[in-house]
Image 1 (spheres, helix red, strand yellow):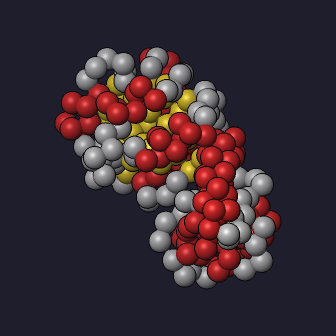
Image 2: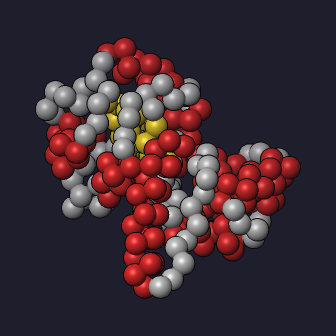
Length: 222
């Protein structure tokens, strides 16, 4: 059971997220608060959530230190719902504990998948945010590699979906197609489809290459 705290700016958003999360038997809603009320830190300490669904129309660097203290690595994982996050800001948010970034109008299935990924310690970004974050990462790596005389790592042209990230993480854990299908409660045919899509998006031809690149890009953890 994943304990989730909802931190949404408007009562309408709070009620909508509550209705969505109540439909998942693996989620327990421990509270619903306004993140601008000034008592979020107290609520987190009191309610001890595993994941915080943090909804905010405008997200900027000024809110990262007080809301997501970087020194507390053991704190709850953050699923951020916001209108726009730049590549640099996405990297700062990830360093500060955010594990998923989605637009505020994301589909319910995407939000639930992001919560599941965050609770498992994975990272889930929507395509636009991931592309921006990878652009920042790749540019930095390219500069370092050029100085060292090495070739920069390839970056995927299209972002992986939350489900594909789950599958890639399980591949990294050494699971076969049948085991992945059983854990995700999907068919082996669907697993093969996801793996084929992962290979295409990452421009790789083997599981080892996919895992290696996924780790280098920060998509999955080992």
